[in-house]
Amino acid sequence: MELYLPCLNIAIAGILAILVFSYFIIKRSSSSAKAKGPKPPKVEGGWPLLGHLDLFGGSQLPHIALASLVGKYGPIFTVNIGIHSALVISTWEAAKDCFTTNDIAISSRPATLGIKHLSYNFAMVGFSPYGPYWREIRKLTSLELLSNRRLELLRNVKASEVEMSLKELYTLWSNRKEGSGELLVEMKQWFGSLTLNVVFRMIAGKRCFMNGDLSEEKEARRWQKAMGEFFHLLGLFLLGDAVPWLSWLDLGGQQKAMKRTAKELDSILAEWLEEHKQKRTKGKDQDFMDVMLSAIDGAYVDGFDADTVIKATCLAMIAGGSDTTMVTLTWTLSLLLNNRHVLKKVYEELDQHVGKRRLLNESDINNLVYLPATIKEAMRLCPPGPLSVQREFREDCTVGGYQVPKGTWLLVNLWKIQTDPRVWDDPMEFKPEISHYP
Image 1 (cartoon, rainbow, N blue to C red):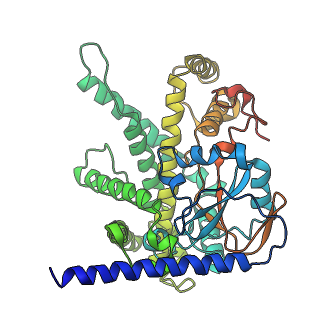
Image 2: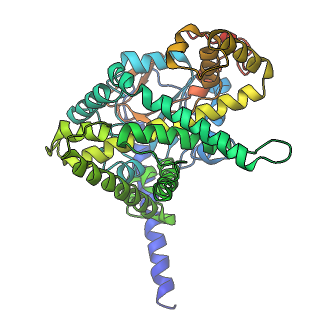
């Protein structure tokens, strides 16, 4: 113990010295930078090195905390996230500046530790830097999974999954209903299982829930647990992100947890990939993983081996398509149940155009007006990602008349944009009739 305490004190003193030195270096470099034009207003009260991290971890949700600053600083302002300056935009005009005029400049994301550890070292298309690899994988996913032709081929997958899930829900009700004829169902979990089944079948040809196969359901629960940790860890801002020189310090063990979660997801994806390689010899190319195997065929893509590219891209598609859909369905149902007059109008439209003797088909959507407006209104009021994942300016840009230097992060407050009182009357009210966008 006598030897341990002095060593600990020396370590703490060394870390503090590095922090203080880093702070003054940052201050000096920022003050010596030449201004090329007006800079956006900066939120006051940031801590040295930590910046305004309290806005992202306080009692308020981050998108609400940032929205509360618009009245004082305007719709375009900057905050410090560690040593990084981040531009926060809260109007559709500023978003248009970013995603049309400056779309190439903001096409990459900052290289945070979470993205590094959880995205196969930036091989996931949603987190890879803009360049040849990003363009190649984006082209592949657009043509082979998200194109109208491919979605038309997969229409039966979605329809059959919805039908099977409804039948299984009815069976569950008939077997477990109480004397009142009612059954309590956790709809968020039910929507999660449904969407994961759809995405799994489209990506990997699997159906993992409610089909009586306990081994597959166990694997799906394992996946859900790992994905829950994935999203949680991806949203963490570590000391090494705030001060990159201290990335070797794993305070709290978050980096260790990230590596463990990445390993768990990789082991599942590796099993699926091996199954597809074996199945491929029989000439059965049906799902997205099969298509990627044929398209890449063992080649390296910009330094990544074929297996890594396939696993990373499939993980990106599953992560992007399952959780957001589940959140949107859950919020839409919640809003409908709390606005019975809207629910009544949805029923009336469905009775008129579909009737009560069959299920709704995708082809029916072209004849419906109020139901699509209801879904759009739910997504306006409760977007699945109210605050965008951060991006990074790769060059100096102008946004809303302000000069934004290269290296600045970008945060888009989608919730604030979609509840802008300049655009919508009573923006916090659920009114499908006003679902018209600027």
